[in-house]
Length: 236
Ligand SMILES: [Zn+2]
Ligand SMILES: [Zn+2]
Image (cartoon, rainbow, N blue to C red; front, top):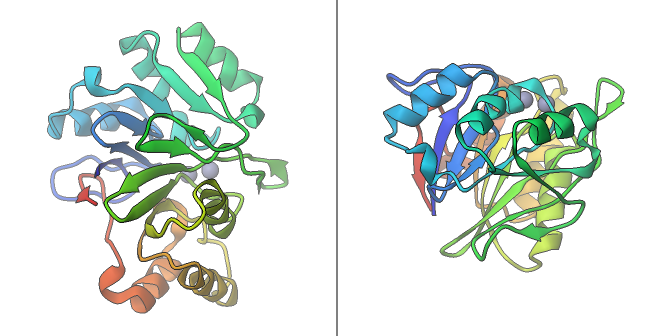
């Protein structure tokens, strides 16, 4: 299972960076689209990915730094399937429809195919307003990878939802935004402990995770900490 990081706040040499997150899973399912189209498409080109490879887009949540490249992509890829949550709001849904995208909404676990699924909607909030979110689940050789956008419902809730989708399946990697940048040290510590207790093997915290939390994950997970930047290519 190949995962290519297309968008992140930090860049590996030569790749464009920007606020937000995006990755391509198994060379064909796009997860989130960053804040703007230009860096996204430039990094796609640099990794020799053809837009025709992209069979569907999964959007984690309706925030600009995850949907920013979607609108340009829909213009280039007419009729693309877009996996969303029912709670994303009329603005998002009508814009996808207006650009010819096929909206697929899910409030529970849903298979895209035999290797890739979405968790469906997990209730969350951001600055006092509802911000539902879903994660992508990719089957790996010995378990599953759980990929998150911002984890506004909490990374623990996102992982729990993924575990409920595939009970008993080991989590080989939790990757993406864990949104711990505004949390205190005690909260961060308990989140790291929760992921350890849930048996998460490797972690790749990035985007809105925050430097303090990334450092704690690196210290606790050691060699099982996966550094992430735009341009990172993982084989699981
Ligand atoms: Zn974000
Ligand atoms: Zn967000």
